[in-house]
Amino acid sequence: MKVKAHVINNQGSDQFKYLQRGENKRAHRVDINELNARLNQTKWTNFFSNSMYVIFFSICVIALSVISIKF
Image (cartoon, rainbow, N blue to C red):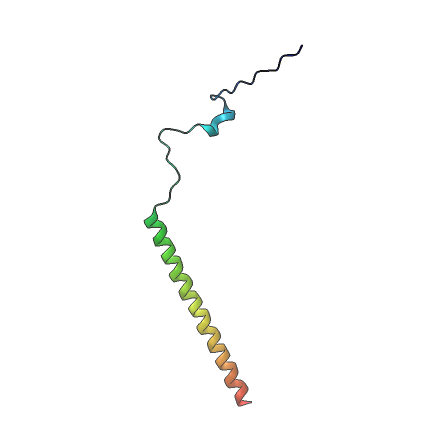
């Protein structure tokens, strides 16, 4: 008769490193003030770049319409 092998989970082995957590480690958290500052800066940068594109293409359309009216 064959006896089933007994599985031993040694938590000290390298296989189970992900289960252990150091005492001085803290969760990966983001500082909310720093995140808001970065998001606000990105929002303003995107707003100004998009407004410059709109102004540039509006001038191009106006210039093309003036040229087409003259000819």
